[in-house]
Image (cartoon, rainbow, N blue to C red; front, side, top):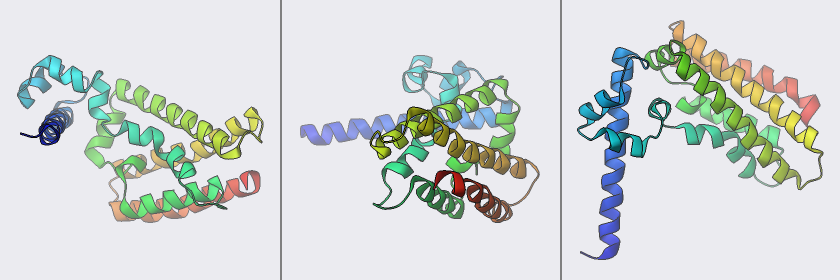
Amino acid sequence: MPDGQGLGLRAAKKQATRQQISDEATRLFLEQGFERTTIAEIAAAAGVAAKTVTNYFPYKEDLAFDQQEEFVGSLAAAVISRPGGKSPLAALRGAFGTAIQTQDPVLGFSGPDFARMVTESPTLTAQLRRLHDQREQALAEALAEAGGGDRAEIEVRAAAAMLSAVHRVLFHRIQELTLEGLSVDEIARIIGAEAERAFDMLESVLE
């Protein structure tokens, strides 16, 4: 077998194993609750050793938030990838609108079972706060790079804090509406209107 093909098969097998572990962990978390589910139970359900689980997911929280890297980098990515002449605020506003249309889980469209699991777990609630903080830091770094060092550090950090706060509030708003039993289409409609008002508040400060 050519080396390239062998590497491709190994990578595919690793990805399949990772997905199997993630799927079984999510199923158990939803059935039993995050706090009550053990790594050993996840390993048994996925048909792997406990060490294999921790090799792919070093922390138990990683199994619940398996899109955390995308979440942390989402705001920074919108700023970095924006076309020339477009402000960071406009780029983030546009990216948020697109994410609403696709009902992106990274935005908070995770479904009632997942939202309930997170809110009922002190561990996951604390981890979500850390992920929001990490996302704000990544955004600050992207804003600093985008400004080419022209803005003072306090301005960059304040801008990142304000932009992140809007996204944080809207994320939790989506979770609230989800737990209230609204459909995803209803939530998207409400959040779309509320996001417009929230971003409007930042126009005079950040544009």
